[in-house]
Image (cartoon, rainbow, N blue to C red; front, side, top):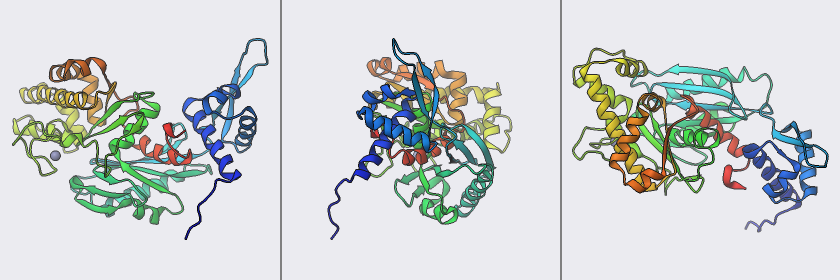
Length: 396
Ligand SMILES: [Zn+2]
């Protein structure tokens, strides 16, 4: 039988180190004096731990702050170049791999277009592995902490990273384990792409500082990340946030999940393009991202009716989020969501207002994502950084 484990001095020291590092990562730069109230550690502990972290190269000095009547205080921050992380976005149209510093600054990247219907695990794994290897060559000897992957579908959050992705035809694929076998000794973390994008927007983007928010991902498909009390809400088996498969119309359009009338089949890029074709719009390129761009530019009757309808369905879908979760903020991201919100943010918000209860609608802001089209990959990197810091933003 395993003996109960007592905390040793070493555990406490490690705990103090993590707490300080996390505080500086999320709230830095700070002076040693600021760190006492922010971490609850004693002045002596702060002095010891910051000296260690500076000596190890995890922290760096970031200028000085004049203090009244005393010596100027040195500002400390986590050195973003101390280590690198790899973030991966597995989308329906592409696999994107990026090497980033600890502040998610991109140092190198690799992108593979994925042909429709070529989403079998072997192909996707091959793209990821080859992308990771190519960006590792650019890391210039800097330590790489690990690989974080954002995937469509339901991801069982755990060491094997088991994926259930109906649109990819994947059922119980242990992607995390399969990638770890190929990428040893790098640790690999896998999560749903909407979750990774949500965490990146929450840490460094439009969601920064929000306690109750929803980050909506609109690409070929539609998902969301629900933030409650500052943390991600996963539900009982990690599938919370499948907003794309909430019903907008009973007996409506057939969705890729097999049900009818899901939001995704109206608002996702694939659903928009399909409806446009059914209405006899002019021919579009095969590439889905290029096709949506043409649809947005096209002034034809088919395009105008699909876009007007999409704005209304999206507004109604956002109204459901407002009524259910009463968020202070909704962020619209994903490659298609960013394009829609750049052009029609006011119309989308007005449509949300016409379907939502007025109290939750008036409390909330609806804004476009700030991290751009690679927010899912950036979010993949946050999975690795979260482990490095011994927990997320609220783990202190
Ligand atoms: Zn569906």
